[in-house]
Length: 259
Image (cartoon, rainbow, N blue to C red; front, side):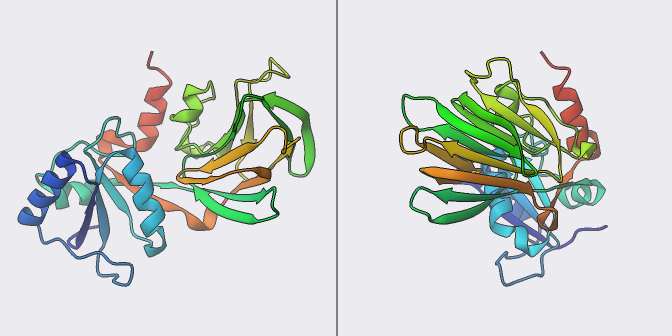
């Protein structure tokens, strides 16, 4: 596909802002609003965090996203080269990623929902470890996990916080999710689990008043939760475009051989 109608968004860093001005000078950039659908692709200037923010903001437009790395790691981005940009985008390959849907109930009874393209993470609030009951598809698998927290990660997010916490890196096409504990105390040797992407994960907070827990879904944080239910939401997938030599699947494989 030839992309001639390019929309562009940039974070506030000097590098991203400078790139944005250059792109606007070199190419016919289409204005991007949530009501206007004339754009064919959204070019994102920033780092991985800004890419995630942009995905959340514009995912309903059903447009592909092409990132140029103006940040640090840039795992979800392409190299910062603005020459021949339309041609590069036209040669790019798409990778579809699917978010997790989080349903959280607070101690007040209030219910909140959010999406996460990387992971949904539970964290203890205070000095005492959290106590969590883990159920998969309505079957209790751990009656009591004592830990600092626990997360459910997508394949795209498996190389980020999940990997730093000792979780596995997941290829995009594996159709699995990673359930990874954060500093587990009991059972001490439990290192997590790989689950089918169709699984529904129910995390019940035990002694929630004494051992308060927060939950974070990408950028959404909810305090004092008593129950969190997480499952993959296939109907909300987004397409990230990558240069052929920097495709996301290859990066995920390479991450498993770095040291």
